[in-house]
Image 1 (cartoon, one colour):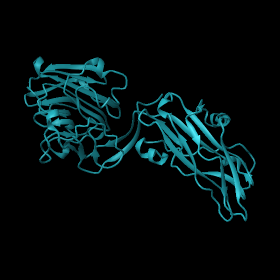
Image 2 (tube, rainbow, N blue to C red; image 1 turned 45 degrees about the vertical axis):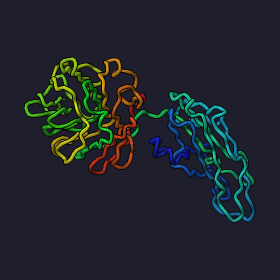
Image 3 (tube, helix red, strand yellow; image 1 turned 90 degrees about the vertical axis):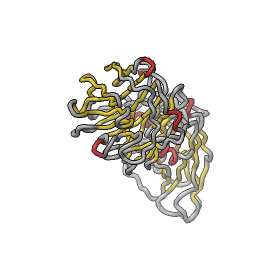
Image 4 (tube, rainbow, N blue to C red; image 1 turned 90 degrees about the horizontal axis):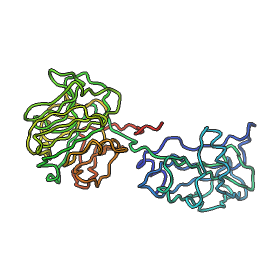
Length: 386
């Protein structure tokens, strides 16, 4: 996989190339060779699903010469200390066996100013410790003309990826699900619904999270309750509490469990804390209803009409056919990611595509979602690294 492809699939950092500033003197750029990056970024985010990557750069000079210019390259772990000094970091050298410099000698042909591409292959990236930072310096060792020392080294940086790197803004938008496989989300006598939300502001009576209006809907606000108070609205009445306040400009994990076989027991968790228990017997829940217009069917960030959008971000939207325990909801990193093959997980929209309006169902059940309007995608780092 090329690094410039990883840029879109792994939401890479935007810091591109790190250049060594070793000399204080003003260097003469003429007739000196230097490295010229080709990739959008030299930072690779370590994820268990990406074991390998490829990168490339050129060797270049300011003006052509009448004869070939020959350049020798090498990986030089000793230059990691230069990187650490400049960026006040404690990176380690990328271990042997995880990289291969595919060519050690290149030439800039007479009359030209750049070499052919120099490629570097990285492997076993999923074996590295994502809690550490690794650096691979690739440097010009010698050349038949002068070397521009301040631009003689490419630093490839490897660091742990956040579990969530991009999210959509749902402000004035609405997302519906096309239930290609409706059976998985119908006749749910046990149910857990989850979403990770960050509301920028309220300022209106109702804010929708997910569900079906007038049937089984998770929403915030209503007539007679504060606009920032979570509510479960069902066909048999609503459940809410003053303990269910949703803050603004903070990420909040919402989990609602329902058990028809326990008298319609409802438990609501905010950030893993059990803050509400009640009963509302609605029988089996049939959530797999594809909308026929904007006022019905299962929606995310919308219900009844366009005045009830969620002003802010939403991701990690899930539906389970069982009641998750408090321990499961509070498991490490559960707010930010779950195994798509988890027992009882019937719909899983991560909202991490980073482009377009199509939202994939990661369970493989094929119940993909679609935003009605164009989505604005925002870069995030969740969980935030300390």
